[in-house]
Length: 335
Image (tube, rainbow, N blue to C red; front, top):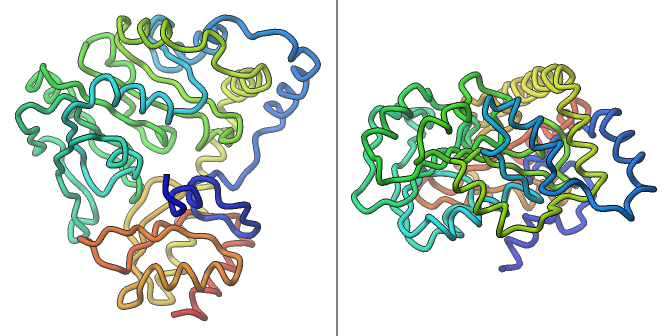
């Protein structure tokens, strides 16, 4: 792992306004904190095997049976498991979550273009021959806009030999989840996390909705106790108070919309997003240089690093409104 990727993944102990890792700027809800704290004295005991109580709640939420659910310590582990097993030849819609080009041995691409605001009609998606795993991130990272997933069943039927992985890390920000389709299609995988809308990134809780045979194989080859007791308790408490999460989603989206508008007022081009992050183009300035100057002001942000788009692209996520004011003022000074 390179120093650059290590810095991005861990923030390198950075103290300041953290806009790098798509971390939710809001802490876990009180009920999650209380539930995790209550489990600490019982941490001499294992959880139920394969996090059964959590799997039951996740299954209810996804509209499937618990036999379709695999839980692990963060969705990145699950994504790596799926790529290892099924990613002989991958097709990506790019730019995309940077983990995917990193862990794909071979991949082809469909490019999302700035002149289309990074929008794409999945009915126009063509999957190359010999593709074993096609990946759709909905809503997409790094731009934050969603796809119309009504086209997915047609793709699953048109390419029955290709497995489709739909990464729904930010599914709470869109209205067309597809996990409920998994029992109907043996070539559909859906991955999700409680790190984003649910503010549980540090608890490391990811899950997948999979065909029963794939879920059983992953469960059988995994640690029987994938989560610590406090993590499982925090996840269950958060899911039991999902209305609070829905209210937070609206708040986060409004903060991001306001931040994008204010950055536009100082000369930054921004692109539509349904999440709490968005793409920004600071051209003719160089994004790496802008990010370095922001870091001097204790603001940590991610240059996109995609040469085909140009040197001006940054992924920006919202902080709290008072920190967003600092961010806008810093951009104003730099640009």
